[in-house]
Image (cartoon, rainbow, N blue to C red; front, side, top):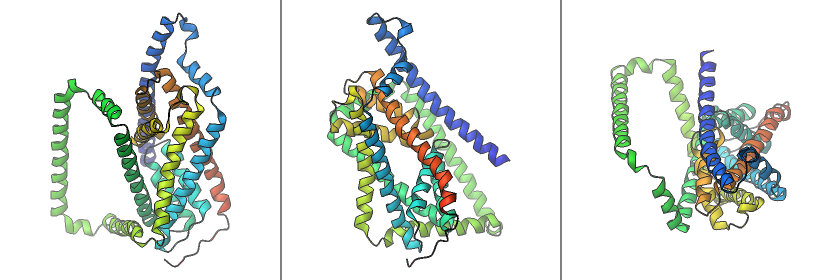
Length: 357
């Protein structure tokens, strides 16, 4: 009961955070939109930012939206193949359908609680493929670390290609007025963390023998050993070039999702692939920040990136919502719901077999 209450509070906290950021972004854009309407002589009753988003959503080129969703599916096929490369050295051959829908369940869970998706994804595959959870968690950790490196590469590439524009964006986003105050807060936070670490280390040193006898310690050692075994699978890849290919393809498809989304929306359709790279990098960073599916953070960074290319705030807000609700919400809810329904059905009489590592 206590665990469920804590999970609920976490869910509400992150959901509230996401909605709060999105609301602040909306308020900022709405003020600017109302001012623009005043200059054009449009009455407030006919000047609704939400109404504009709805109309813009209706007016998109749905061919490109369908292509965005196709790229979404292709990226996740590459992800399941790459994940299977990591699992096979453990002695298991997961079915594609189980790996694919486990990934979809992970995305679905992230809409409620950031980072929960990795646990749900690993738990789903472990359950249906009869693999120890700690081993699967190790492979998921490697998979996500590859994404971290890929995002860093995308950000670096965007920075190099659009150095002048991005540097201007970074410098203008700094808050010089609160530098001293934030520096003091950071210093106090660091000392607090160090103090906690020292106290914990001292307690562990003094009571280590007693700790070793506890079930929690024994289970922890067992879990870490299995987790480490999962991470080591990257050393035993039989086709490393295919692993690299699918890693590149995942992120190329992600880029195409952003670029084709821009083609679907008239105010951004004229922007080239270089601009698409910048917007993709900003959006990718927004998704990583802990909020449900990137809600609010994705919108803020995408709007900021598009502003660099003279895209009006209300149009950038519409674009961010079109792509966010098509993929991060629409596709993830659709495929996540299908995973919840189909996984128990397709595994009803399934008995996984071990393979040769």
